[in-house]
Length: 421
Image (cartoon, rainbow, N blue to C red; front, side, top):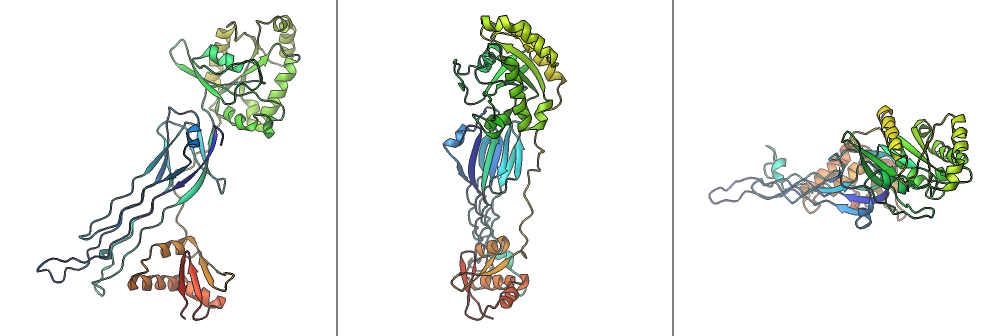
């Protein structure tokens, strides 16, 4: 698990079971059924916490379970709902279903939330099944099982400006010089193993959020080096500061190489506005080569700025140019936000009849298995109700057509039934 990607298991709570209960009071000989419904199970909710900027906290906990609802009681008392479990994520978190790869939500703004696992509904008590022809029903429902999902969380940092460049170009030094960030800095490649965020205070008092994106090398779009793990963070930035090492033997070639990696990762990055800065002008080698390098850049339509992040020269001009570019830039690239709602429940008629290796029959289907889970098998009336459900849905006809005979074992979920035709 890396700092910007995590896999978590989420399980919502089961609904509480409905109660089978009859009113018993002195001088009330025929009180009737008064079993209450079970409470709803708790849900799993993801919420954006603006104070977070990594997914590191999922190293400590990657499994989340909500509380079950409590059972119903006599006197038509409904059980308490299970408490929801709140899972906090940083702004810019994309949530994917790990099995299907489908985007569940793109959480951007602080306070934004989405329910990723709905709690099971509470089972109905016997008071709900009373009819004129059955005034004393001895049946109720178990609570609906909760949902379980494996989710993949992917963080794409939210920043106005992303600082990109080859390893050791001085990105972390520049971020520290422009903002209040204090990244780890040293003179060897790949010092930065994860993006750093910093905030620069502008003259008008407005903040400018900058992100130092770790160094990218040839083949980064295929995952070489730190690779595509960090390229995704560039997607949300409005503007890029492309930092070139002025002391490099071939600064222009370095510039072209990194632009190629950006375009190969995502074609839309090719059109993202860049402010090009040639760094390390405090070194004699860079200062001497600047006039020729500036001319070479202008030949390809680029107007670079000469800076020294270490000495602090040229940074005011760079910051002003970055602010101007941010104001002129279009909205950053974001994923289309899906509606944070649930899919429709499974179709009860969507089932499959198959034969197990031991010769028994198996009826598979989310709806029919859920109905079996919600049946009180210890009471005769719920069992008859489940048998009627099999008949109405066409399960009996399908078993008969498949060759089931009297005495065969039929499995529905974890329950075994004996087939009687």
